[in-house]
Length: 348
Ligand code: 5AD
Image (cartoon, rainbow, N blue to C red; front, side, top):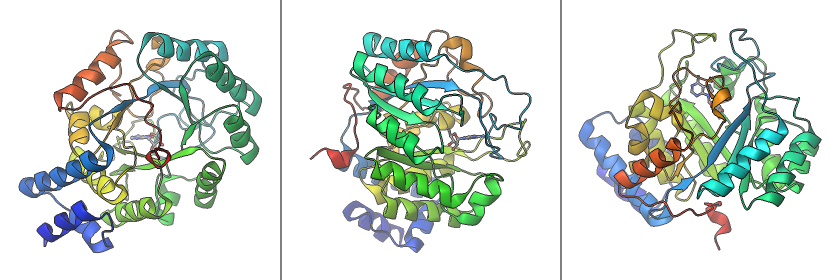
């Protein structure tokens, strides 16, 4: 039975829901290595050996939302809040362009309306005119005219994890957000010509394998260009304090199955999986991932962006994150060439 599913996986990503669930449920070590050998072979065939790097700037941790899992939720009065001034964001992006081989900057924040349509458009325009970087935004749910203005200012990509394809699970994780609005935002971003990223945590409270299968089926239909998958990590200053965190094991199954069904999606080896397992990112690269996101948030702000505790990006020098990422890429026999790593549907 497993053999048949894995052989089919090499030939086509068109797995049935039962087959998806069978793969997600794998715990036996031997079956596990057969699964990741398969997803790794699919990655090799459809994506090649290159791993793409994205320089991450977490520019604000102010947030208007109250997602139950997240350390920067509005209701967390213990969080230290910061906003990086626009000039400093542009300067940090220029530093990435001038001093590193990285070709993408990711501007990520909580849902912070201080950065208005015009302020953020201006930041994007300056980065696009003063550097050759691709710009990825990750600023949450905003209005269509804002998404449009930022796209016109030159933003290339947008990350908006869908967080849960299952409506009921989405609701229980997000007391003050609306499932339909989130899905609508994803469609709007696509319509505006962004390369679009979705994704979800693994092991969030209440999440079952059926819910994860819903996520995987959503990837099959929506076809995101990028998909972020990391374990849920319990944060003490949230309603989910004391809850069990997700495991690296299940997260790797999800990465593997996502690679198999999507074939070409860009999949990061996330900081979150590196935070719960010191070898987590290497294991993710071996299970189908092909992107890493070294942190370039200026050091004085970095400890404050605490969506989950003990985030693994606190190395002494900013530059260490780059050499560290490249060393990890090489250690698993992969290559870093410094390509843009645009959505693969744009390759032709
Ligand atoms: N553990 C793991 N991931 C988290 N995120 C937010 N809070 C946590 C947490 N406690 C993820 C969400 C969000 C992304 C930026 O980080 O999926 O979209």
